Length: 527
Image 1 (cartoon, helix red, strand yellow):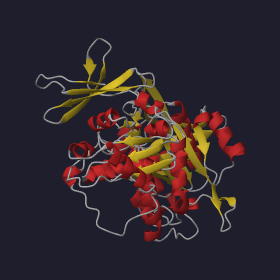
Image 2 (cartoon, helix red, strand yellow):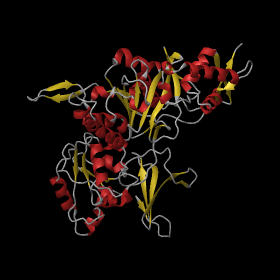
Image 3 (cartoon, one colour):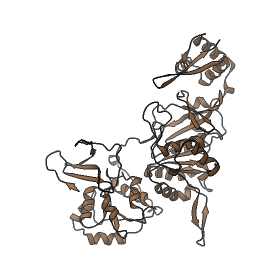
Image 4 (cartoon, helix red, strand yellow):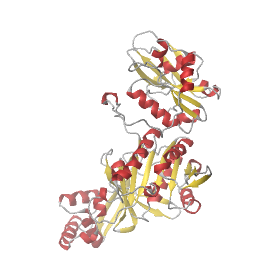
């Protein structure tokens, strides 16, 4: 429904977005000069001009759901265009926010339907058409992209109708359009994007200042250190919308939704399910992708091992088949590259990971890949991942799981690459039978590079100097915060690994005190 308002700086049109029963969830207001704002009711007769906490739905949802199954559902760019087609008796919808804002949760309303997409004739419009087509491929029973003839630059379907286009011609163009197939591409040509058409967007966090939605994250570490436990802990939190372990009284929750798991090393009934149960997961929201069904040369169907190079469309279908998927776990990433991929060749790795990164962005999910470390010792943590550096290059963030050299049962979770992060802190955790992953409250202040340093690299004079210095900082009866000790040691040029070894040899005791919900750790030497 459109309400026209004539006074200046008031909306010239208000577009209602409703739920299945017709209840208004939010509105999009159009202004002149051309501008749009989204708003929701404040419950007191006024409006709040944001959609925080509001369910997003396609435009004219009740009419969309009532449309006959044999009719094409048209998807256009903008509410005005949608209303025009609906006035002609053509089932039509759009999404709030304009081009390139289609969300995967809209797909559920178009499952099994015939879909025709008509975009604006500009670069954002073409990218929007491809985004929607990719998202609906395998969900809708048929997807077609309808190219309107003679559209000028930035022209849309309303312009087309205003300049001689008709309903009958649109139906003819729809019937003649080929079925969309993402595997079919045109001959190579430059794909140029004007930066003036690129909208600056804030990062949508999966785990605040650690991992982002719509991006690839790597977690690296030696076998047996708990990387799989850690990702199942994340899956559990997502399935219930639980708090992240570093919340510390702040409302920092995992995005609640579904999880897709690919695991090549752990048995589902004996390992994965019991671990999730011990963590309190809602297993109805977690699915495992165990393989794909393919046809042999004689047309017979057989099961095959999942292969990222060949079966990425199947992963997209798996993500879209679950309502509101938030997380995909691939454990380990190297097991799913495909037999023809050399994991030590940059070009081979990029050919697999770039489409995976695009899938994460298009579906709006966080993808976490597990990687093992190479056998090199020393050097920076960012170069310790097994295989080509292209793995690290493709990921926006890389995290390291390593053993605490002073406590073999304690694990450190450290940032090795932080392109989109602002000075992230590390965390420490342990794996406890019956409870799963248990995090410590105190952040870990050392770096990933320091965590990988080995005690064998410490020379005796440096260790003796550190012991002498630490004894002076902690005379009998005095306690000092661990944070202060680390900071002072850094000023003295004492490496963290050397300080920790000095701490161990001197018998320094660590203990925690809580004040108003915040935990602080102290060091002292008992005499």
